[in-house]
Length: 480
Image 1 (spheres, rainbow, N blue to C red):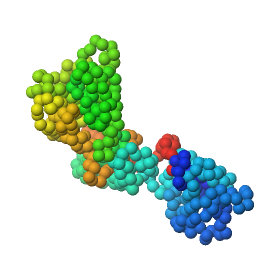
Image 2 (cartoon, rainbow, N blue to C red):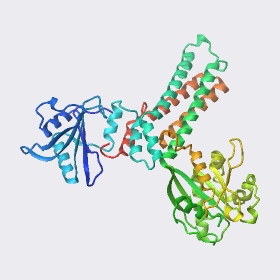
Image 3 (cartoon, rainbow, N blue to C red):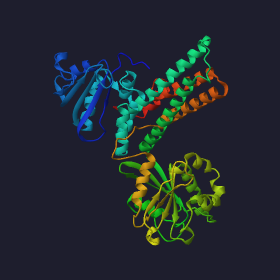
């Protein structure tokens, strides 16, 4: 995409409504010309770059009529946000007066900017890559402190640096493989050449690590979805109310009180969580309860983490064996869970937590037994949703799952398209490795490495279509 040399854009960069200050941003080749007319400058030297100037904003069609007065800041190309000449006018924050200033700027040769067009120009003029540009929008739309910190790190290039390092390794290996193909007299045996295998394994390991970090970044951006499931009267609604800090759900001793899905958006030390309470899971002939149970299964299937509640005060659950949780409940509901069992196995027990509730009745102490990576058992937490005993253990474990530590520097923010690109690169790496090991097919490995390079390049914008750019920047706010 090429920016026209005669195209100058302008927009109000502050939110609509009334405020102390409103800012108009102008970018493009006619910026200085517009500044001279609106500020009645005698020459270009009167507007010193990066120095705040107080002056009236004039209506040029009427002699010396002042629309407003305020601060002007000039940033000459290429040392500006967009890489073009940029002017910011800071006036009073009334919608009428700031729109009068904007109308005058349009009369002088600018046009209204499209959503995200300033950031798009910064990307096209190599002031930042695509993931950094996206991080700007993510920072503006941050729903938590953790998301804001992660977006800042992405904006500063933390994510881009990891992708660039991966790309460099892929390109180096691709060059080596293709050189071996193009110069067969060197007689490179792909299977016996330990450099290729070793480099390929290092890339696979590095990409897996970045993908895991990106998943955490996406959860911090969107919030981890935690579904509370279990049998009726296990204390699911009480746990929702405790985590939310308010009475969101109706709590009664009558089993099956919750019939629909209840959602609360909360934060734990800056970590966004979407907590979902579901209907008690049991065999039922009541059509209303059946619908609630069906919706519960649907939410379980989409969950990032599942809290499966067990009523520890019931005789059958007092000495239950956690390793038999599947036999005790899942296998009893096999027909309903057939469609989602594979997704549980894929995510692993790390995201499946058994919560033994009501220790206030059983007179037990709060405890957590975290599953080991090679264990087939889920994590067990004993707590009381009524008295809050053990709730801190649960909150800390949820933070651990997402890899979040409020006392340390956060990672980077990521989006769904980043995850899809990384997964695509991962698939081609594994396929190329398989081709190499099974058939010593250097040509097929080289082709897969080309696809890996292209997938990673889509993240930073090295390989990107105009359609992709249009979709990304159209989601930005106007003036950014």
